[in-house]
Amino acid sequence: MNACTHFAVLHSARCIALALAFCTARVATAQENNQPPEGFTALFNGRDFKDWSGAKTRDPREIAALPPKDRAAWDQQMRQGIAQHWRVANGELISDGHDPYLATTRDFADFELRVDWKIGPEGDSGIYLRGTPQVQIWDPSNEKAKQHGADKGSGALWNNKQHERFPLVVADNPVGQWNRMVIRMVGPYVLVRLNGKLVVNNVVMENYYAPNEPIFRRGPIYLQTHGAETRFRNVFLREIPHDEANRLLGEIKGDDANFSTIFNGHDLAGWQGDTDSVEVINRELRFKEKHVGNVLTTEEYANFIARLEFKLPPGGNNGLAIRSPFPVKVPAFDALELQLLDDDHPKYATLHPYQFCCSVYGLAPARRGFLRPAGEWNFEQVRVDGDRIEIELNGFPVLSANLAEVRKNPADEKKHPGAANKSGHFGFCGHNDPVAFRNIRIRRLP
Image (cartoon, rainbow, N blue to C red; front, side, top):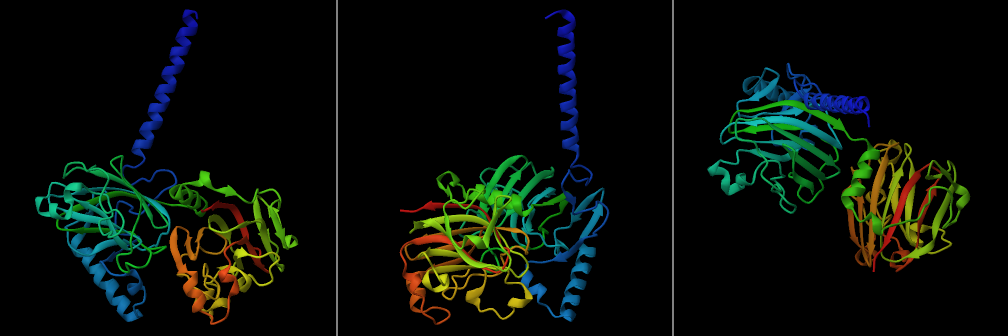
């Protein structure tokens, strides 16, 4: 290499290094002065309380159900509280440590939240997710709160009773300094990074208001304070689209290497039955409109875990056939049919509970309220092990039933001989609607 070439290489390397440094600096400063990074929206504009209301620790469902007069009185009380206990200065939201909390006027499902906060000595605060307490923020040096776990640091799901409630590490900066927190919530799973350190790794957030129920699918974000002055700034949120959420749910669940893909995305190899009722488009198995038919695997499965994504049109109806004979006439009775239905559609206003989405049709009703809007992809996991069947929808547990018990007392009071099947084919039950499926995988259980 001659001197000129050597100089050119060094010059080029310096230019690249400077460019990278500049880009890094831009990334670092993109979260300053309430200017959101690319892909994020500023929930706080740095000037006033636009897009915020007030709240306290109260079941969001209860607030939503208030009669108009009572709701107006509640909102007025919250506005008065904000005026008394909150202020904006120098691009910061500042609380004197008294109720009410700040609450977004919008609800969110799956999201990534970035927020900077600074707490005073012996302070105690938190961030409510979907209106539910809370990602804990407090002073780790507060001896009075050590009995409650303050010394373990901020960032974890303190109100959890069954799942982990304390952080993996203490990552707080000294009291009086700013902290940067990143919270990602997908389904019921929460991941938290505090000052660049992982403190919560996809822990299920429990429902504080209804401990036996999953956390809500959607809800507002609260900035909670009590006990000391607390400040927030750079409050940014990115809504996670359903495709990304489904991918993340698959990663969180893990173990994908042990699953077998049973739909290759190109043709119907490995499938049988009313194959004229379906078509393969864009790696999707899609039912044709105004076609009825059952499409089943050529292989049989006894105990297994199935993972798949499905998309319903408005008012769409389909089902999963489990342990089905072949051929099959009525999967809901000759096998098990797990309902797939846009049950929020007006035409289904008179449904029986055992007809809700993810119910074992006629036998066991599923929890409602965890289906995404029509036109979005949903992530479903079905576990069938002996007489135990468990279903998760978009990460939320919506059904757990003992088939031996529900066979004795079926919800529809009809006979379901197929519920006693020990093995059979897996598949789909078309009901005239263009319902689509993709990423269909199964793992056999012993």
